[in-house]
Length: 56
Ligand SMILES: [Zn+2]
Image (cartoon, rainbow, N blue to C red):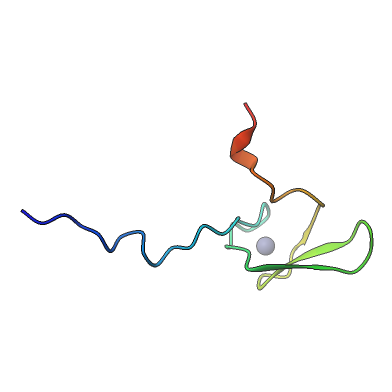
């Protein structure tokens, strides 16, 4: 028996866009309240990507 070790090696622990679910590589800020996820380009709220699983 072999263990499958390659399943998670390709997936980096990136946060996902709350709008489209695309893994967000970077967040671009155009103002104090304007933040855009990259590469999908959706506008997101500040702190929207911070540990959504930590609540509840
Ligand atoms: Zn998006």
